[in-house]
Image (cartoon, rainbow, N blue to C red):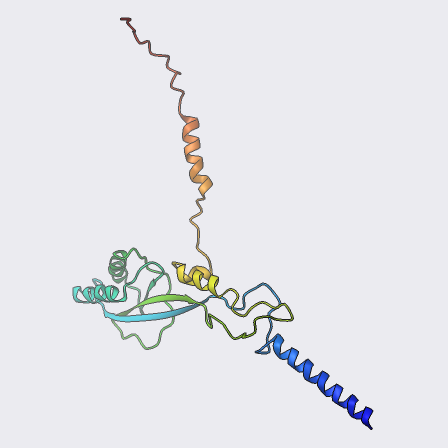
Length: 216
């Protein structure tokens, strides 16, 4: 009878130790056995709209002033995208908006995102799309243990690097699609100087100019 009790107590003790060790290995029930971060940058888009009255000649002066003030208030700049949404495309309106956007070194984008609300006849909707990059749930100190028996990666791993990347990138959209090149590479630019050097005629091809020298 005593031996049975001892065996039962030993089994309970072993089960308790196993549960305790399992609790130490992961506090939230998830582990990351790789060297990849579970926290990646997220790009969030927000659309801001302004409806303007138009006429056959484009935007009236008063509406152009409204749009210019709105651009200043929005502090638009590199990374923002400007698009027009209207039932009928008016080249004069597009030209006026393009001129105002060029003051901030921006061009109009082709195609406007879907926005809420109906556009009244005779009006145009200017849409400014602004993207923001951030890393959610960082810093992550959910793992309170100093060691992991499974040699797992800390849940906070990668938060600093990815948060800095999201903060420093000028255009968050480049995290999704990358920057589109112009087709001209650094090699093409450097080859121009090399080609110009090779095509230049030698300075001595026309003969050496004789210089008279006199002695003292």
